[in-house]
Length: 259
Length: 315
Image: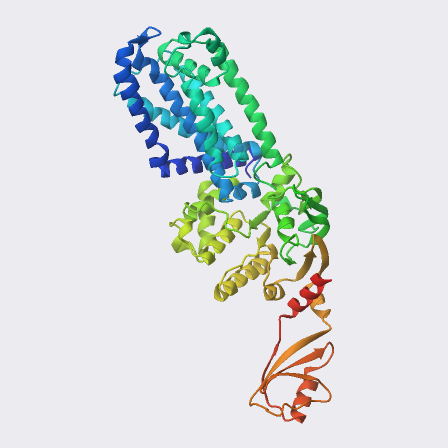
């Protein structure tokens, strides 16, 4: 007789593997676009414009933008995987398969979130592979690098889950990436050091969580950062805890899934 | 099965169940219902009566506003305890609408569902084979589910609901839109499941002949209230009279009248006759013989349960 923990581990693995199978099956829509987009970024911003900019924070511009571009792909894909997959489950009503089963809500949440993390990490690896064609990829601190990328993808996967719970139509899952995520990424220090900003905008940028993720990841790769690591981890973990709490509350209430 | 050890109470017990939707619509008012172990039970009612809401609450797909629901003594309340998981483990659900991923392969859908119940992969694979074969879908196991016909999709939902060997199977209009041949084979399979494996079956249907031929007990719900809950046999005995349609071997243009039984002629070779409860059919035939009416066939005008159902929901 399997224990509850064993039963729930099998259920978690089932959801996770289903999520991985889903994004692998439609790799042309999930894994290929970030590779193409980031290739264009490296060519246009890195090679063409970057050669005129020279150095940023004491390193070549191509090397400076690489961690931010990788991180941008990771968080976008972690977010959109969970948002689109869970919303599709709602739309096709296959979420009912989960609701009738003896599954605690935290197992459902973990399955989808780690599905998003898996896609985020896989995209990160692909984009890193693309980056190798343009510049040298270095690792300054593997633990910082891997923990920041993991925490960032968990954070955005949770955010994608909340978006999917609230979404009533497919348009609703593209509003946040278009109008919130993309501007925050562009203003989050991917392409520039916040030292270049006027002091008042430096203050504003401190409210952008992506700034901390990009800089934490940049530290892991290059050893340079505009923010302290402690602040980076503190903000990431705090936001994750808040999003986890909100997700669980919404799931327990059956928001968007159980009338 | 340890989840059922020493339990002899009802398979499903509902008490004081109420549901008010967010828009203020009162779907259920104080529903009390018990379904015995091994029963084949029908929950009937017109559209919007509260059938799907009741079964939705039992299945965990709809939040209840008040009341208690338990399966084999395990309460189905909330998400907090082991009891609700024990209850869900005993329950299989076949909803009204197709609710599987249309892009997934047939066998993957069944195996994945088994995984949600904590069934290890190899065991899930064996069980999926068993049920896909039993429901005639084994040849289709490797095709995406969207390529199945409507009837096959219904059977896939039954296979998926059975993969964890539930003791209670809920079917919400399982044969809606299914052709008569397939419907018969599904009836046969469900009957076998109930009689040979002792699975308690609860279904809703709009085909009253389905309920009449399959179910031992019937509850009728209307406007969120149970208006009848009894055995199929007892329910049918409540019929005070039924209308028979009589076809004659040859036309009778003169359309004779009988003194003992009023005939309602539909055309020269067919009439309807109303028979009161307790009247022997032999008496009818005697009257027909006396009037030299040669009968070729005799059949009920409508399904008997249908007559009762209409009476009850009109009240």
